[in-house]
Amino acid sequence: MSVSDNETIKKLDEQIAQLQARKKTIENRERAKAKKAHTKLLFQFGEIAEKYSKCKTPQELEDFFKKFC
Image (cartoon, rainbow, N blue to C red):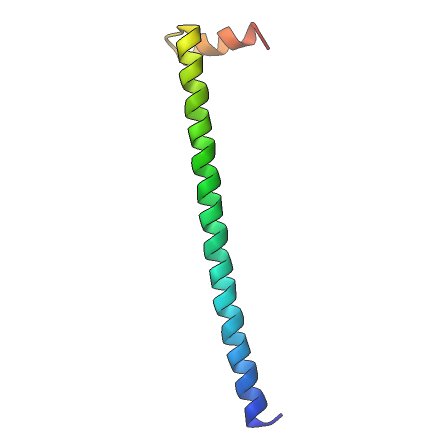
């Protein structure tokens, strides 16, 4: 291989590393969005459960739901 080929390979390896880093950043961002959405959903479920069950403890709430599931 010539010097030019080695330089081309080196540049391509650098580009691959940069793209992999970008991919990982985007994947992490998407994971964080999904986690945030899931947390919001859990809070909404909790608010509804609290509103309609009138339970005071987590155990009471669990017992309440066991009656219906």
